[in-house]
Image (tube, rainbow, N blue to C red; front, top):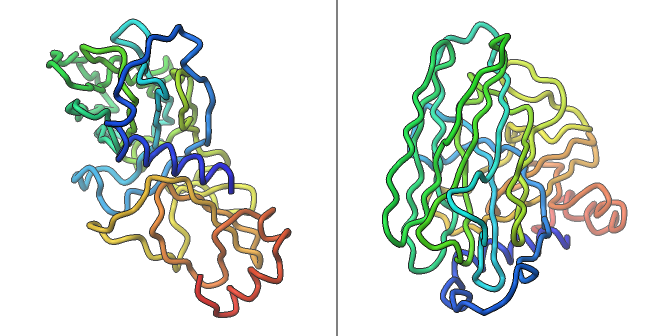
Length: 283
């Protein structure tokens, strides 16, 4: 549960305590803690968080500068490089929409909405920089020589390189692009590291088995309503009967029958307690 607590703290600090953290402190580069507090796998965009029906998935990433000194690097700077498998025989397009889960106090957020053309080329347009704005955009898009992979670089710019941090969702269409690798993550500050879903892929979704955290929400779960107040926290779920695991990037989900909030290790440490919850006690 330590990761969940830390990630909750990270998201809440970014979302609600930016004013407290915005005071700059004269410190050297060692003030930039480098510590991933969790890994974030792709999630199904059940609530259409980018208001675009063409996307069905998103990846979470976040950074927090404890001393109000993030990212403390020359800007613009690349945040992450995403490699997607192009779905076989796909000739469609996929938006890459960037939305904010939280941004620094006193700053506006400007996330680009970019369209990838799978069977053609897509022009890169670097947006102009506005004052007191945290801007995130697609800075590079290339296809592999054999045409089976799309590589997308996400970059960040601001007129102030010393802020309290940033939280992002990167939305895409998993029916066209399936995330296969994540590279070159900017490692400054406390951060949630985005990760690719592992395991075999079929019909546009990761296979469901006990060793794979699936992209699709398991049957029987109920997502939070669109206007519900939820935290952007990595939450683990485990089904003792089937051995399946799942992970959401926000709280607020109602459990499906037979599932618990926690990991397999949590269940094995507190089996009697969790069994009583599964049998009908309210969490």
